Image (tube, rainbow, N blue to C red; front, side):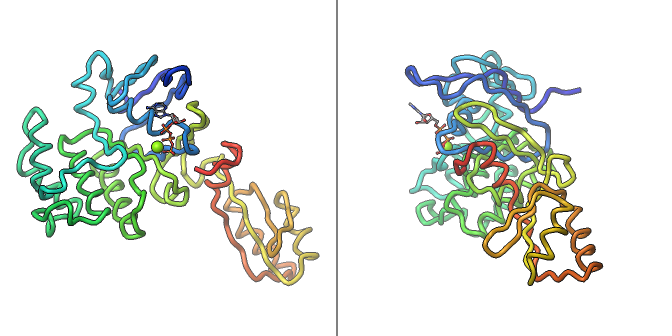
Length: 303
Ligand SMILES: Nc1ncnc2c1ncn2[C@@H]1O[C@H](COP(=O)(O)OP(=O)(O)OP(=O)(O)O)[C@@H](O)[C@H]1O
Ligand SMILES: [Mg+2]
């Protein structure tokens, strides 16, 4: 079996005396999209900066497709592409001039074909000869992604790529990442604050807090860990509550009765049972469970 695209073992980093990353380990599989989550200050950007060698770890090991970032640096780095914080572009140059500039830094040389292919991929063909200073944030972000992909990395790392993007921009990004992962087997690690976006975009979620690993889990619907909170509303709570109690823990909220921690497949059964017993329902809502899980795991701090 070939080596995993990215493996992090026992990574630690302090700034002065403050431990920022502590004994962090995780590994990523080929062709999957990972959401990298954690409250503000959890250490996501610091971890990413170490992954792309912008920062040196105090301890631990990072390997990219089996190549050690410390001892086989160029082999490791040639397999990683990243957009960390805001993409650094030359505003007075055109998008194409920027790509050509970054392409020249790579060995072996990046072909003109590859550059054109990426311009097409991130849908910047019409504006690629305009100066970057005329670009919208979304366009700059897309140019950044094209730049990160120039050398066909196996792992693409994006730090908060959805920051400031409008819904269309986010949808485009999702489409690109899916294509890269599904069609080209690229492994993608995306740090983000948008939990609902993570649910749509990612196959797996990795949560850290205070620089430590908290949990890694699949977003796969039928994973045994995946439960939902279902909100029910009907004309009579008196009738609804005993029925719902047969399925899970029930709590009365303002407008709804909340059944927490049930399997999604149970919901149609509940609706059917209610109908059979003549119990009326106005509304059923399934709640954003990643947010609940996240808050539970990180003790209530938002992402
Ligand atoms: N160069 C530095 N010197 C000292 N402390 C730093 C430095 N860079 C980051 N930190 C500290 O490390 C901690 C983690 O910061 P980091 O930026 O990695 O968090 P994050 O998870 O990316 O947060 P956010 O969600 O806000 O982007 C913070 O407490 C931050 O203040
Ligand atoms: Mg950050």
